Structures are given as structure tokens and as C-alpha cells.
Image (cartoon, rainbow, N blue to C red; front, side, top):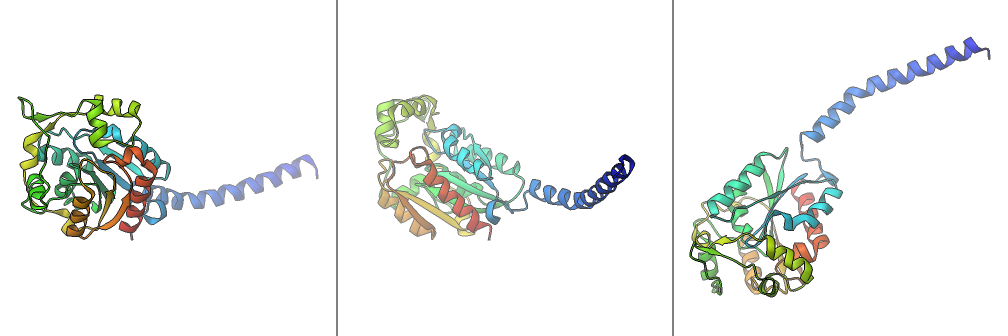
Length: 272
């Protein structure tokens, strides 16, 4: 084939390819826009946005391993930084993060964070709640009232002169919270932990989101902060789908992949 003929052949092929790509572009743009707007079509049809809420004696960075795993699986993840100054303040902090999500949300609360997500989970965007060895009051009930009802009162938490409880001694931190976490990591956790307002434990939840949302509960079988029997009683009371793990209280630090697997499963089930 002569040079001009070859050039005309290439031009025809390029023209056809351009037409095909041009016809496909609007559909591709619509799909990309739908994904960006968070239609709920996340990994495997799951809820795509996950909001993690830490408990007492921790901060948002403690979720880092779970966050990384979930991000690798295609989820958008946000970790709330609770001030731990009151239930109302922590709920407000969680609601601010919820407003920044782009679609349906799976809300995850650990320990004290269970009370926070029980209130904040009433947001219309929340499609399900995962509780990790969590305190889950009923409507009109405080954490203090919940533990009293379950005959498991809080002990050994003496507030300072400002009304805050600290757990900044690494040895005490490991003994209560993280017996299965390496000591080097425990020192980092204890150094970063903010104090918890003792008064927050007596603040009641106004409306219990678990009454209107599907729930999952992880029972941690080697927990020294919240007895496994108490956790199971809480899970039964709220009608949660229960999983268990031979873990300390900080399961998402010592067993991040197992915790991420539970959150992943809950997100897929909540998206159905």
C-alpha cells in the first residue's frame, strides 16, 4: 500500500476509534459521577462510607490499622476526634463528620463510643451501626444507668480536680485496655490518650438509634475493661448480630483485620 493510502487507512481507524470513545464518554461520566456522589454502591454493593467513633482513653488515630485495610477495600473512611468532654460534645463532633459524608453511612462505635453512636446514629444517612465491646444505653438511659441496670458498676475511675479521668500510665493502660497489644504500641496509646470527663457517664441518651437500625456487636472475650458477660447482655438487649473475638478491649488495635472483616460484612449487609 502506498504512503497516502496507508495514511488514509490510519485516519479512518482513528476516526472510528474517536467516535466509539466519544459515544462512551457520557456514560462513563455518569458512572463516575454516581460513584463520587456515594449512591451506596460501594464494594460489592455495600454501604460505602464508614465513620469510626473511638471511646474513652483513645483518639481517632487508634483506628489507623483498620482505616488502612478498609481504604484498601474501596471504602471511604472517616475517624471522629471526640473531645470526650461530654456526651453532647461527642455527639456533635460525630454529627459534623456525618454531614461531610457523600452517601449512606455505616457507623462504628467502640466502648464509650457506643453511647455516642447510639445518639448520633439517628441521622438519616446512617444505615447500620457496628458496636465493638460497646456501652449501648437505651433511650433516656445513661452509661452509668446502663451499668447499674446490668449490675456492673464502674470501678477504679477516680476523676481529678477538674472532673476528668486519666489512664496515662502505660502499665495500667495495658492491664485494663490492651493486654494483647505490644508494649511499645501501648506506650504510644497511653501517651496520646485524652482524659475522659467523668460527668459524661451520667448524661442520658435522648433517642436510641439501635431501635430503628440494623446492628452488629463484637464481643471481646479477654476484655478487662468491660466484662464479656456484660457485652453479651447488651448485645442481646439490642437484638444485634453477634460476633466474638478472643481479644482485649482494644480489638481494633490487636486484631485489626478481624475487626475490618466484621465492618466490611456489616457494610455489605446494610447495603442490601
